[in-house]
Length: 194
Image (tube, rainbow, N blue to C red):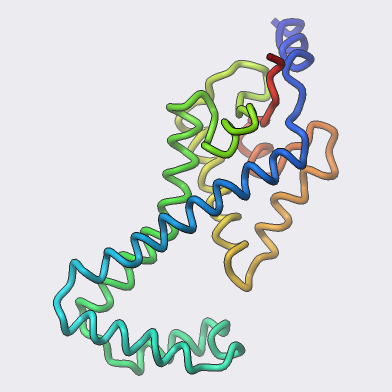
């Protein structure tokens, strides 16, 4: 069995770093577009007062300096002082859940239902599999991997990008080119030979 796993690893070498980065970039762009689309749709589900409050909040935030916008304590105080209605808070929470949940859902579905591939990975013929060489990963491993990878993506889109950078740069310093989300989920991204 161990020989089979070693043979599988030799048949499917770790994916090249450049291909992984470009594939992830493609997935990130797709997710960014989907999150923006959801952010446009969610306000339409609420009454005019909530939309008006939300638009005023967005306008007021846009007038803040970048130091204030990226200070979570100041932003929390700012939102609290805005005296938003419960419906507007619900709208904001819906957007937050969508923005955080969509990347996790996207990566998890790709790992489970599409042979370990997202659209970006499929474009380059890359696949995620167990480190032991078996192709399909379990739902738990896919969820762990997707949660960590989704968190890394979200942090890359904010001023708090260090966790995301560390996750992906980690693969530069190990021979199997595994990121932190690969190591903690017991997986590896490979490029199968055709």
